[in-house]
Image 1: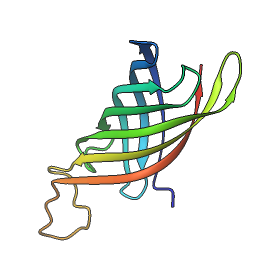
Image 2: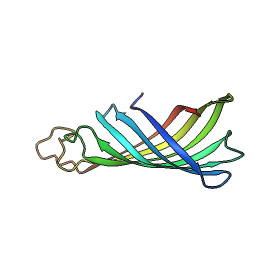
Image 3: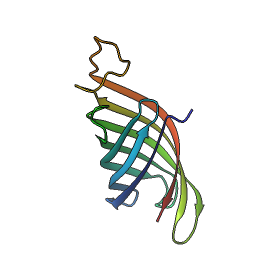
Image 4: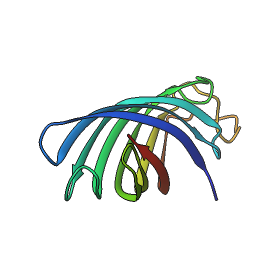
Length: 136
């Protein structure tokens, strides 16, 4: 069932009381395709009530392959909903529900299925997921 896992962090700057813009970086692996990558991009968050409550977010990041024989580069797009689970004075734990799409450029990469005439060009992987986070 688990086809992807990763670790990412971000830093946000509030443009307005309920809207923030940030940068993100991280590491992700797609276990089914055996893709491993670093990601670097941006994130936009809108908080419905205030900075310590429910928010929606849109993130866009570039995927940088750690094995260019598998894939060259790509893009990660995620739309999610963040829900606080536990709030403390210095930090809070959040749960996120999200839809994610990864696009991988496979030009001149090793064929996925191993057929002699196979020339992979791209692969798009869509998924839904759940994540846990710590907010400081």
